[in-house]
Length: 278
Picture 1 (cartoon, one colour):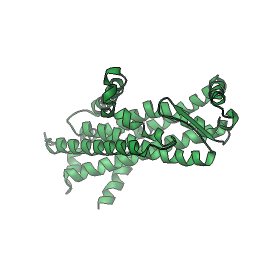
Picture 2: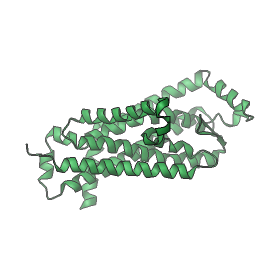
Picture 3: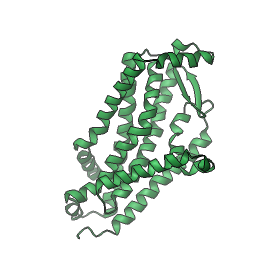
Picture 4: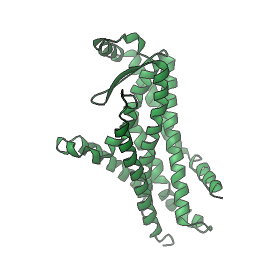
């Protein structure tokens, strides 16, 4: 019965048109970025960077390199927006549409209802990340050859990899992106469990993330950067480093899992205390 309930929740979630807004935005953003890469000085700038570090640039201006470059701004800007949009809808939209009381008239507990909705949200977060990575790589392959991977992020990673190893790490990095998306969705889900509109839940979660990002970049808070979520969200980039800082990755994973659990518990407690009948 639990799996049947989860299947119905997934069917309902993916049956909404607004669920697919993020997928369409990814496709438009990626094609716009590819045109920019193809017809601007981006390629020559990257070639100078590679040649200045002693690498043969033609081997690393590739579909993998361009796909990773496209992912970075989308992971920072678009993914949190659409994960929070769906997370804010999961519970609050049911209240707004007037269907929650009918759902709770069935012989299921509130905890089970929330657990199923949260799991459906996690599935959506994973699908969102998979589509983001797959479309980025597919579109990049149309314009660029299949060669080695070059990745650079100041203070975190600077590395070149063969095509085979780069592709394996590209796939592996999406696992960590899915965890990031689940944490963002869980935050919006928590606010959705309170007595507020779906838009308010989405805005509050995005405001929380934006505040974390701003405070992390203030020099005074540099010593406290481990307390901010964006610091832990960047673990997907560390998978490309050599050697891979597994201790740092494990620490951030523990923080993200604890954050997901905390938001779910707080949201469940708030929902249990609500008077749905009023």
